[in-house]
Length: 311
Image (tube, rainbow, N blue to C red; front, side, top):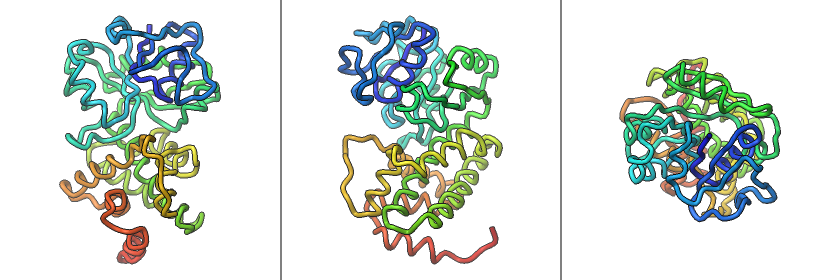
């Protein structure tokens, strides 16, 4: 049995696709019935059980943590006694703003006896819930555990590629959210497709720069969890990070009930970049913009007036 904690759009979508081939238990705060609030019209298949008590999840062989990155640490701190020692898979993208850790680092900090992995890559919950073909990266430092998870979590329409480069997979998924906000700003401000392409390219260079500094492999950043996810989130209005950036660029309000992972990640990563002297101008501007320390016009001017250099 697979357990899923978090009944938002992504947790619900995973329950729908995984529940087509094996028993799944889904738990979410305040969830009732078999409808997923964030996925209008989607219904859970018969193999999925909606748990009334979180303790029911502890019976699962594998537990997916479909929680926002900034909520993961607090949840694990509260429930570590129940989850420690279990096989835990993070299904979020971000860098914890209080600790600077990625999702698997947060898991191991609170549940040191657990085997930690991360499921990441280019995906929209609606596509997964509809049964549309999707390919993701499953990163686990323990390759044997990763291979087992790969077979357990793959379905006819959800194809998982295995990696032991957890650092690369985590940074790819986290940093692309920051660049997606910047891409949204570009389009919201009416700067055009050429500017977006340039922004994505230079943003990808930043992603590589920081990830490689921490020991990631370049090929991981060039794969699904890096470049693949960057392309998706920088070019589609389905991306909450892109929509948020577009609202900033157009000086329009944004729905505060929507989780935008890139906001906190921009601040966390900007702090890391300063600490380790890694040049990340786009990330720094996104952090300043989202904290309202700089205007869109000044952010664009600052980036365009940087010294000319060799690519």
